[in-house]
Length: 150
Image (cartoon, rainbow, N blue to C red; front, side, top):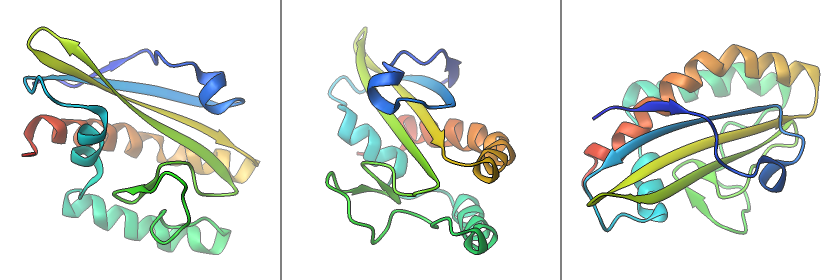
């Protein structure tokens, strides 16, 4: 199983006009019945402990700047998947995580695309600092679609 970085294939302006960042990762799985909601549940239901520790550390570091630690407990029209609201949740930045599932032979190709729009220079600095972690986490979480039981 190989997670590959691919060019984002979404309508960026329709999903998040003015976004300054976009990336996408893809994996192919053998589950021919997998849909986007089930893939998202596998991706975000519960991360590895080291990832949970990173989110706790992130929450401590960003709290003085007014950034929210997660979407848990926040109102969201579309609900919550894992710690993420179906729509972005912070007034300092807006983001979208698109989970796309398409047929691939007898299996499915699962692509996650992340789009981010920031609203101030401090958050752009924050985004630059977390991008290496984001790239690692995106790959690790996408592997969960392959290995996580349904």
